[in-house]
Image (cartoon, rainbow, N blue to C red; front, top):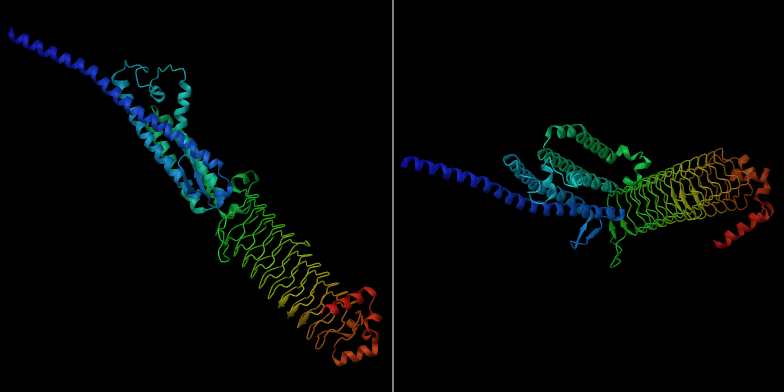
Length: 553
């Protein structure tokens, strides 16, 4: 009897302990869930706030800040960070915060699953009042259920959206290293999103299909297009609808930093090797900028100020530089092929070995005076009405160019090649040359007054109405040249090759010209009027011009 009583007491105690555990375990789980939910809610708010903060900061940043990597002031953090550092650090920090938040979410979901399966009688109203806790209950009748579902998925997929936005924002900088780093961040961030999205879901099979058939192809396509946009092949032709993403707009921007002291040896801003292809730089200020190897291909640089800038080896192909101010620029080995320079001022610039084929600069205000064109390529250019006076064009290639009414006064030309160029009305007054080539060039009404053209080659050139008054033409070649109405007043034609009596007979005057004795005798015999004084051989207009030029010299 006593044994039965003891056995019954043990059974009763065991039942009491079991009942205690039934009530104690939910309490412990609820406490852990509440604590985890509190931290998760704080992390969620922090994560979403920081993502929105990053979005707004990047959206409000101008193209000028991105291009010159200008320090950006972060209002709440009271920090100044360079744009490049901000792009990379914001992406990495967003990924880190997302992973940290999802770890708490995973713990929270695990506690909810334990509570739901071990204690089915638990209702959704019994858990800690955080919206994301309600998603684990299928019988959730919360009035904002679909809003909660949207918030949950939005908190998941906002990270890839943000990383894609950062990648697109940096395309204007055209920096391959930064672009590759941000693309890598996008792939890492998307992988983290997919991992936690599938891990924390109830129906993993459906979500895996969504990832395989939607997410992975989309990210792969984006990565391929992103890499293609960075490639050199894409630079040749850009679709107009992508100009807003790919091309920087720096119109009227003052890109120079405020200089404290104006040292001549210092540059005010360093944009070495920067890529501004297709950028809108109309009216921008880049005085004394360091732009060596920079890429301005097809950029709109109308009325830009580049005074004193270093553009050595820069790519300016097909750029628009109309009315640009580029005085004393360093353009050594720069590529200006196809550029528009109407009204541009390049006075005193260094254009040694510059590639300037097919440039368009036919304007009276275009100023190339005092420039150095040593071994520059000027084939097929249009420099009509331009001022190239007092410049050096040693060994420059100016074949097939258009130099109508262009000023070459006071220039130094050694072996400069003007073959087949159109030079109507061009002026070479007081120019000093040696072995200049004018083969088949069109030079009607050109002025060579007081110029030195020793050993020049005028073979097959058209010199109708040209003025060689007091020009030095010793040993020059005139084979098959057209010399109709040419003025040789006081010219030195000794040793001229290919010069025939028939050619000279069509000239305007040979008064005071120095000729070889044989040619002079023939002229006296057949065409003595050519040796008469200018007042008899020239009309009133030409006579006034000659007297004026003589008085100046």
